[in-house]
Image (cartoon, rainbow, N blue to C red; front, side):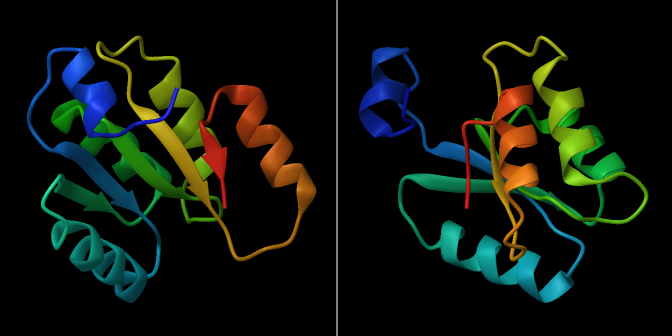
Length: 119
């Protein structure tokens, strides 16, 4: 099910779609955060530099969506996505995996654990 303003309203949420950005490169996090925050129907709740931080931020902030880099230090994005998706958060946080690596196994694993997509 896509996440958009119409689906949010159907669920009774009329506010902006909330987002967390998780990437080990500060410039990437800042760039995505700035682009997303400039959209009137999106709100960036926080960011994380590794998988452990991503899980902590998502459990605390309860975003609608987390943009998650696949490869990060300490724990990677696949580990973090699995932790977030299995936490039973209500409403559930959707995970969109991001990677610059052209490795099909990352996509398959992300989808297997329940990510909404990968790009």
